[in-house]
Amino acid sequence: MRLGYYTDYSEETAAFASETGFTSLELSAWPDSAINPDTVSEARLEAIRADLQGRDIEISALGYYPNYLAPEAAERAESKRYFLKVMELAQRMEVPVVCTFVGRNPYQTVEENMGPFQVLFTEFCQEAEERGLRIAIENCPMVELKTGHSINLAFSPEIWDRMFELVPSTALGIEMDPSHMVWQGIDYIKAIRDYGERIYHVHAKDMEVRRDVLQRVGILGQSFGEVFGLGHGWWRGRAPGWGEVDWPAFISALIEVGYEGNIDIEHEDDVLAFSELRDFKADMESSIVMAYGREHKGLLLGYQTLAPLIPGHKS
Image 1 (cartoon, rainbow, N blue to C red):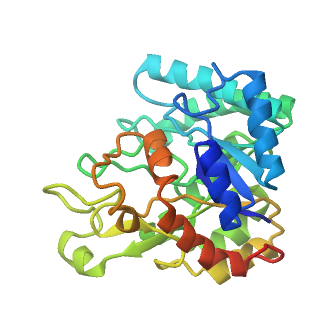
Image 2: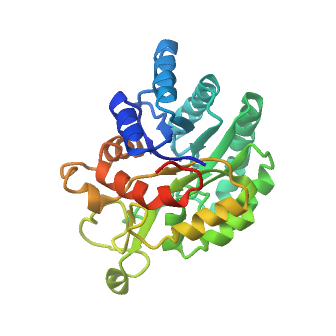
């Protein structure tokens, strides 16, 4: 089990990761990333792999998180086309896992979305099986604060059961992120024990619950004005060690169920990043990854929290 973080690739990023002690990276594979599968050359891929191998950094996964079930047909078609290219890229780079969302049509119920999910992810899993890959679905609800629209189905164990029933391929699994479970009230330790064999990747992000705000706005979140950061006003992502996740229990549970992948920090700590990213406005996942991957305070604090807890990790 190696410790790393989710980021776009650059030589500077690789140097920082190595100097800090990280030995894993989940690389962004979004269209504006360094490894866009439509445009990246084989020579560039070889240079990236050689750079990371020379620093003893393993590429744990490729990350691309669109909405495959969006209401707009053109968006669905392009996301599908591009994800198939990401899987081809993962095979070329000998990366075993691709991490993504399921997506959701926010104007339909969860039940109404399950049919389109089954059709699409049956095809995705057949492709993954042929390429020797695993697909890890992150458990983030992706709820838009002001509208309440959710664009990712796979946010609870109840839904995972139905997903695995409809698409029984073992190519389909979970990218476990405990932070989302904290604010939803889901037991993340029980989830690890119940779904251990289907956990194919892990995001390490902590969760701060601001109970003083919660008591005023309720669980649906702040209704007026701008919310600071990426949360709903009463909850917000933090660097590991700065929230409510019990990291010794979390890592112990992963060890107990035999998890053999890596743990990669997903840095979305607005508090720590604010001093360096004052003018940054989050508009899409890829821009968040690029910006926060250059904000080192949160990554350093997360490393200091997690490194002593991972057996065999250099610290």
